[in-house]
Image (tube, rainbow, N blue to C red):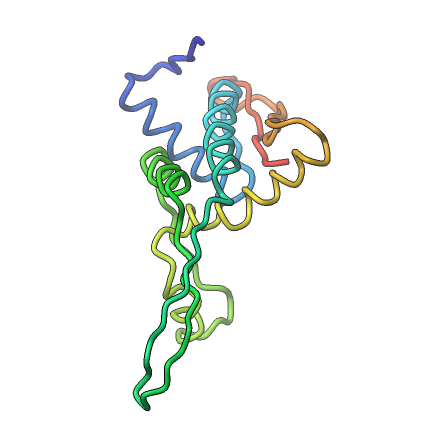
Length: 169
């Protein structure tokens, strides 16, 4: 399959696509040139397909612990399965992580509590929100893929480049 060169060396092109796809998956839509939009959609669809195929691979086990008062408690521990862990590592390598921003009017303590267990917010969003959403959509529609949409907009002032919006459906 041919790739567009986009007028950049390979390392710069891959870094640009990684950043564009990360922004697309984080914000839900981005505006860029048409050729970059097509390549970004392709890149993001591959990442989403990888997450959709593996997001249900979870291993649960029960663990007995004793607390300070000496009572035994049974705790259910959930971990990623082998396939999901490999997919998670692959997605971490393919994308640039985005940081959680503090909401307007949110207290510092509430913000800190909200982000305590999250190391990679973008990867968590992909596996917790996007993958189940698109897996359900694939079951309803009866086909996989088609997670993004590219819409042509106006031309850019200055160099007359065709602009486009890429969005998650």
